[in-house]
Image 1 (cartoon, rainbow, N blue to C red):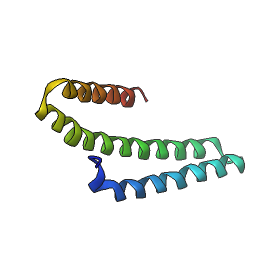
Image 2: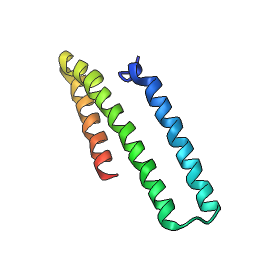
Image 3: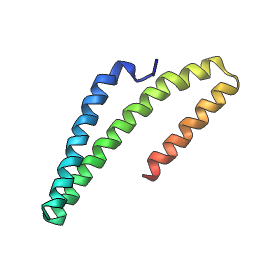
Image 4: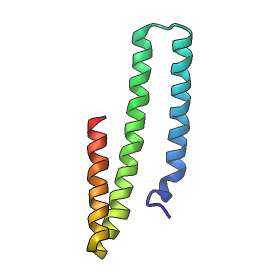
Length: 93
């Protein structure tokens, strides 16, 4: 069971909405729409993906990482390093 399971339906709804946004951006490019309008939609989709990422990260920290930290040992170290790497990737994007 994933630590985000309680929020899975909400995450899926958000991701379907993002899929629609990205499809809309493709149509805008195909229709040769004004660059700034396209960039505005790209920014909105990027922000929506970042929101999903933060919800997943929060669930991972609150579930997987906390549970591993309680148990201690090498598994805890692995989970913490995974979380650190995920945070670093999010900060760079």
